[in-house]
Length: 241
Image 1: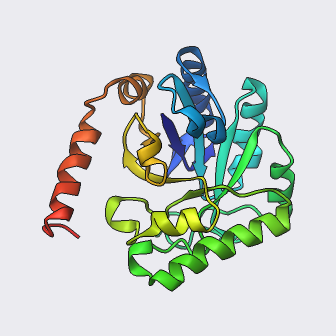
Image 2: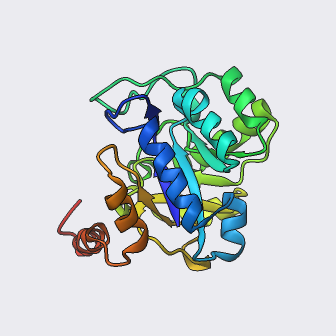
């Protein structure tokens, strides 16, 4: 399974898990699963493996999350929205959260525990872009991250990441442009080689308790999965945008 985080801070807030809750979550996950890098995960999709994934590259990753990763000796993948480096989450209206600078990302990328992935350029929904624009989002973000950070970028996370956000034929473009996997925000515990370019994740929400985290990780028929099925059926039949 792949767990999805965004912002980490001392207190719970918009898209923000508290440091106290994160510590408890990592202790639980590490006690029940093998926390592995995303490269290890997609090599065999072992159901006892877990991945820590973080979208948006907020400054809190360096300040709050990386020290915990070091303490727990736990790998994570960080997905970076390239056009917003050194800026903030302009796609969210609720709260402004600062994104790391290139210098901070260079420091982060030197950690053996951190895999750098792309979150595209603009953080636009791929469904609103043309095929040419999607290819540009994938190739240019990868090229810039690799050039500036000196790392190989093999993994992608779709902005917004629901079924109707992914764009048409994006999986083929991902393969052609050198990506090994892509994460959605669609709820799901299990992945396989067939879902490699539409990986399911479990969203860790600010309101989650340890009971709700365990339920998300261990309940294959969690209500979020049922909600996803219903929503995607409506989308496929053109009843929901």
